[in-house]
Image 1: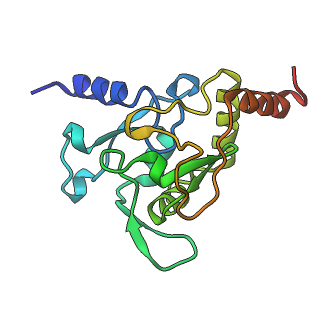
Image 2 (image 1 turned 135 degrees about the horizontal axis):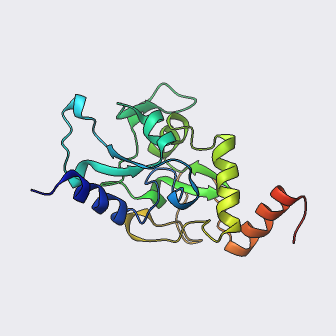
Length: 176
């Protein structure tokens, strides 16, 4: 059996230092990311790699002990995004610095975890200045391409240079 610190290192390594929900990179954060139980222990979730995700403090706190949420604009309740079984790019896409839910699961997760809070958008803009946004595609956390089908919302795929220019304009009042 591995120690908790070994498990935590493996969860962080697997996530490549990014929150598995909002895709924020840990390197620019003032707070430590958390090992999050996808199915909370209070609901019978185990502390095994298949049930653990790397989460920023905001996603971890917003998710809390929930596994389901209501789809905005409807009374339908769906499971929240599960980083172990769901593919990020099938449920979400980038629309400038915002995350758009492509599916009911994505839409419910965006709302429940407040993935487009003003602070998160500013962090993404800062990440762009350092070449950390948009996140690179990898594994189950891959990003959509122009040929990816859009289920319920239009998505924009753009290049890193455009993101960096927009971030500089926001932070410095123009391009530099």
